[in-house]
Length: 197
Image 1 (cartoon, rainbow, N blue to C red):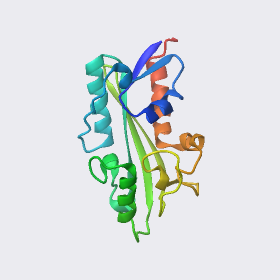
Image 2: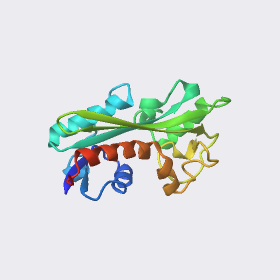
Image 3: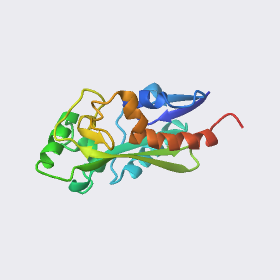
Image 4: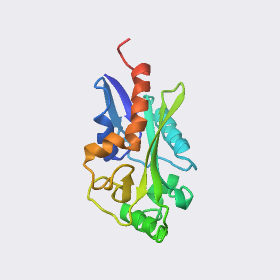
């Protein structure tokens, strides 16, 4: 089995990714490696944050590693919250605080178009590769649905009339930004790491 490190402490993301990886890969989280510190994310783009995390974890553990950074971009807010999606309402604030601020900032705004974007960066000590996925949609006027996490209760994907928080998880995974980035990433690692020649 080939070990691959996912540079995250988020067990929701680990479970999501583990379900779609090839069976010949063993996915390790930071917790599996006994690493519980928070990773630095101090760049201005999702791509640079993902690269920073992947390179740091590779240097620490010398194992092929990938990291992901994702955010919500709202057109009428100039792409905010973007790279600051997790900290939109301030450090230490919850997802519901972030949603509350987002809805407040969109009060009376007609154009509610938005997208989720995910960037995966892979580093194996030789070169760094990035893979991007997006999911277009709009922001609802109120939070709906108990499912998902983050901004899912207010994001309505294009072609649907329910939020990610209301949709079954299988439907969300099929069209999500993270799934699209993962599909590109998996195609790449099957060529790069696969034990089958």
